[in-house]
Image (cartoon, rainbow, N blue to C red; front, side, top):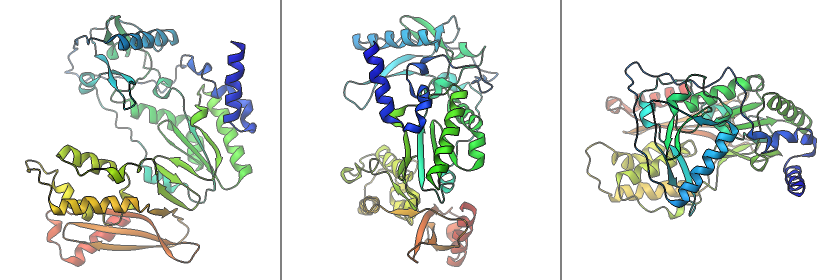
Length: 409
């Protein structure tokens, strides 16, 4: 046991910088297993007035799944994350296969409960707004919170509503798990409130369990990092050292490669695009466009390019992969494989807007002059036109493009 503890300590010491060794407790997995303290951010499950409690069937398990289920129950009962229940509600509990061969992911299926839950409209941050705050930064530290949703308790008296059924009995969670409809809203509100002082000062952005600190020089950056570590320790929050990065000039955050002067797409996320086969179904088209929409700000005239593909998604339309669809598919792949980059915008410097409009969409590029004296793109904006807008004269469509740009930026 002593040898194992020394190994863990050595691993942590190798993963975190020396100036943070005083906070090594915040990175220890064993200490993160403690039950989360009660907070003002506890998750509530407010049911609609017409909600009817429902039972569910019991799913059979394979021998491997049985072992994994028993392990989950034993570990989470010990941590206090779940407890035995007498709830009149029961949601299904089963396993689904992960992409990794032989890997399993347990799932509480809360779809019926979610239908009867009053929705929390608390917004998740706009990724574009978070990235805009990184202007002028030259150093970054990325922190990954351990235990995720499990850091938030379910409000006392609401636990029974999230009960789930197993062949070992009925259990109810005392902390948030994935699958509850309002969990993302609750968790983002929790993170925003805990770290509000740092967010408001403009050198920290938070998206769910990902925290990014940024500064212009090393001394300032280390001081900020230590301040945040003290705050996390005070609030009994822990980090995964293997997923954290400290004092780096380049970091991958929210699917983007962030550097002091520009933003690029994460090459890992684009690794399979060259081998992506033409879709054979509407579902395949939706999957392709859904993945690419994440990076649409890097591609000029995106809506014009994707129009033949978007047309395939229209209701009651027969799926017909035409030559026009293939051209759009190949062109879009080529655009992504060209690895476009965007410069980091500086609000203290002038911008120019280049607007264009076709019969189907408006396209705009926001540019700013770089250190080389050339005008580089900061972002692209492309939106389709409504049927009535397609009847506008060309100059009115171009004016609409400018208006959309001013609203966006």
